Length: 185
Image (tube, rainbow, N blue to C red; front, side):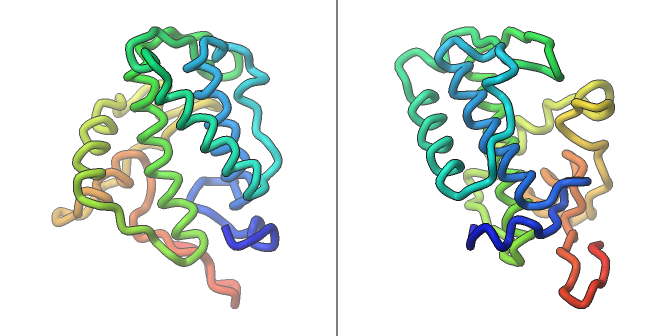
């Protein structure tokens, strides 16, 4: 992020500006870090946090340390699903959930700032199969706490990133509105 003055930029996430997206990302980092430590069901651990670069960086360091802790991937984690539903998942699965979310949200942030990221092919080869395990219908795609929008059609010649974005409900061609007020596509 370039600074607080950019937090009002639109994002591909319906209804969220960049500040709200970063607050969500910070809260998810803290929630998954808590889950890795065995305290992931408490709704307060998943709360959005004020959008500051420092808060995001601190949360990123915390989640990385928690994920790297001995046995984290092998333990069963309690995570919050929706507003108050506890779900038990293998740590490796929870880490995969967060991995998918962060690749897509990194793209959201980049395109919002006018700098779409280019991910290395091995990263895309790792994340795409995980994302394709997300059910195409049901609670993962609809409702107030759905983590993903319904899939959109990817171009026949879509690269892995565009395929990932389309499957998870993003328009790979999304562009931030121009300063002159043109709409996003």
